[in-house]
Length: 458
Image (cartoon, rainbow, N blue to C red):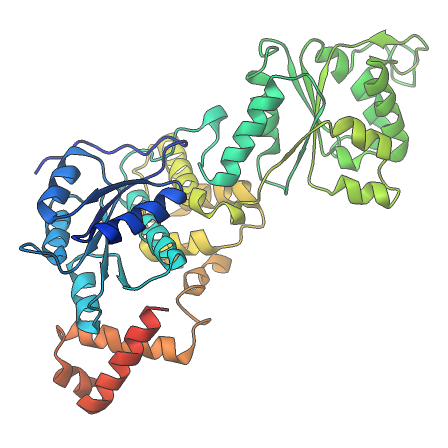
């Protein structure tokens, strides 16, 4: 069966989920709960209706009941797996057995949820299934898979959507703007987005790294100097404020300024005029100021290390960038984006990642944020021996991250339950053979299977 090539949804459009159940009440519960989380939900009361919807729409996840008249949910799973590679499947049933769970997983279901379940259990199972779909897309993609987001950003997580809204509002104003966030979160990219989506986008955008200029030179670099102002001033030179006339000046790492320099900057902001070093004559400047810092300026102000009045003057519009660890659904999009950027630059085939490697990247805490992720991918492209990346290819600090959710933080009962289920699956559900491998009798195995099913429903 042919299928149109899928494209990722725009940032304002959630994934399409199809719920299949012969019970109208069950369909309504699933529809209502998932719609409340922002998903688009279609419903079908039979497998034939479901297959028709799937053939006509780009369905991201199918949630199907197991037992339905004439054609079962298991048959639907097989149909999807044989024809629709990009559609994930989740099984729900009121007839939960460990054998059913094993069969569903072997047939191709990503999640297995026993009735009755809570709203949160449903939502978390859906999220896990869609995350696995995204990981598979990244691992197998031959083209860039990134959401359509504004200003060159990558990622459509809710926290980033809020940032995009803030940028849009700031770009319509000339008010001073303060961008905060950890190093590597993209503060300069936000500043550029504000400038180039505003009315002054044809005017200069000037970047100043306040922490990278020696204190003794910062004033002359910002405001310029006249001939003879100091030793070596052999001519008059304009500063960054004059260079940015009519446009935007971006003061990065503004928290690194000394208190003395803060006074001079405050005067420039209050009067919208500057004095060149060596001159007593002020000159008007028409500049929009955007500042950024990875420090807590309000805390520094309370400690007397940053001027209150300057803080309030800069913080007219505040935009806080989230750390990458709070953008987990964006990490795989960023991985894919940087992979294709650097492999295209080097003329190499796109890297493919194992599920374990992608899980490690997703679970890592990323203290250096997007910049650190970008550097890691660049290094993998340049230093890799092939086009397949597995956990051993990752930096040492990241290699154990795939165990965070499935490894050393699990209880003994959870580890045992997983082992019992894996052994049973390996012998195609033969309980006698499974009991022999486990070194227990069938009665003990039945008891363990009962406990395993209970753990799976928690």
